[in-house]
Amino acid sequence: MTCSMRRTRRTLQVAGAGTAALLALTACSSSDSGSGSDSDSGSAKSGSSASSASSPKLSGDVTVFAAASLQESFTTLGKQFEKQHPGTHVTFSFGGSDSLAAGITGGAPADVFAAASPKTMKIVTDKKDNATTPATFVRNQLEIATLPGNPDKVASLEDLTKSGLKVVLCDKTVPCGAAAQKALDAGHLKLTPVSYEEDVKSALNKVVLKEADAAVVYKTDVKAAGGKVEGVDFPESAKAVNDYPIALLKNSRNAGTAKAFMALVQSAEGQKVLTEAGFLKP
Image 1 (cartoon, rainbow, N blue to C red):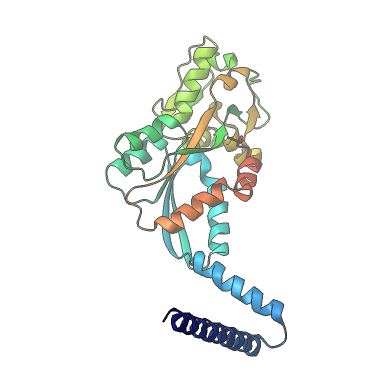
Image 2 (image 1 turned 120 degrees about the horizontal axis):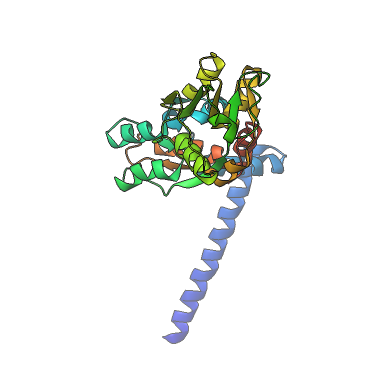
């Protein structure tokens, strides 16, 4: 009885091996007929198919709320992203980080928030309106913007306190305004501006339009303005460097594509665009 069972098992094993060999041969024949004599091409197609399966095509709209100082660099990155992923569209809303944060917590539809300070990002995270932990992707430093040629000979932050000089600051609730106040405190200086502006672009524009003699803005904004203003560095700015965090938002309607845009911002390619605009690496 035992010998009979052994013979039966032996027969099944041999049959199984033969079937496996036949299947393998059939598979090889199918592969060869599908790819011709170029086996490397067949492997490449297989690898490409596997890659496509693991990386689904991105599509749809993404709305990014971003600090006003990011306008030029993010617009460039948005165009690059759309070119790399046909079928996607990135819409930006630029402004003061505090008002953008308030809009997000108030229910404004957005996928990504890039703030000019951890403090303004905290407005969103405190309400648990973020889906990912905020990550610092760049930093930014202040600079004084003066009229072209610097006719008032502004050489320091203290010079902005001179009588008769019309100086503009960002509102203290905005990151650039909070940073300016921090720099003034570091220099033990008091300054009463002719106006407080809602965001850094508005402050810079006052100088561009010659409605102010100087403004405390970011280096990136001075650089973006080209010859419309002249920049003056000051040592106190080192005490008021802003970290810029970015996060995916909880109510994102296109999380996959939004994450891909964030990945571009944080990639070597994205960092190159940002550092060329004058931002500091995180």
